[in-house]
Length: 249
Image (cartoon, rainbow, N blue to C red; front, side, top):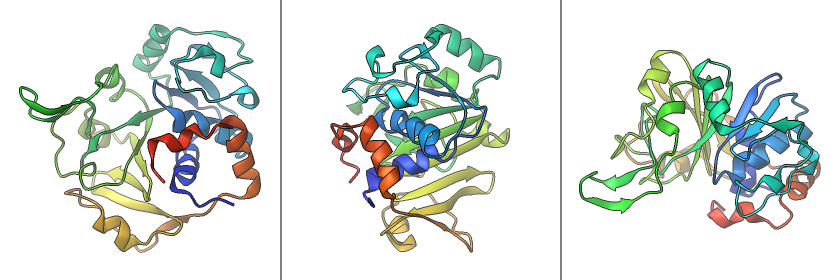
């Protein structure tokens, strides 16, 4: 069994994939890539697999995580190639059901920042940038975000809006955050705590949150430790343990 936060984040990320979903992951997305394997092999979800790697419908059993999630050899057994440009076109036509995004900052409205910390003109930190985040973020039906649970990350207001979340919330599009402590859903009422990772308490979640005001309902689920079978599937996809290099625990 494993109750490591990194492994439970993968469980959280994979749990939102449903049958027939068109699912896409981008660059630097080790945890989402493993989560897609987990959803296919353990949860037995039958979904369309696509990614920035561009092979279409890779076989989950053949996926092996490499240091670069842009490595086409990491996703084998595919039935064809669908270019990134074509994927963006599908998103624009409302055909992309779920996509994963990282975030350096995220606020009450599910706005995410991947651009700068501080002012845009004189930033304290320049971040890698959002690539196509600004284009895709308003379009995808379900967006699942992964981020570190830290006061500097879960903030009242992001320093820069790379992906705008308010329009998503207003339009009723599902937006969920999986951190290394909790699962949070963004709604018109505000961010709601939906789950807490095993070995953490609600108080620990709230005390390590910054300006984001998380609402706590009467019932909050526990994201339970992985079984031996779950961990086996994850380890087969990531035999080198590259998922732990992001230091989520």
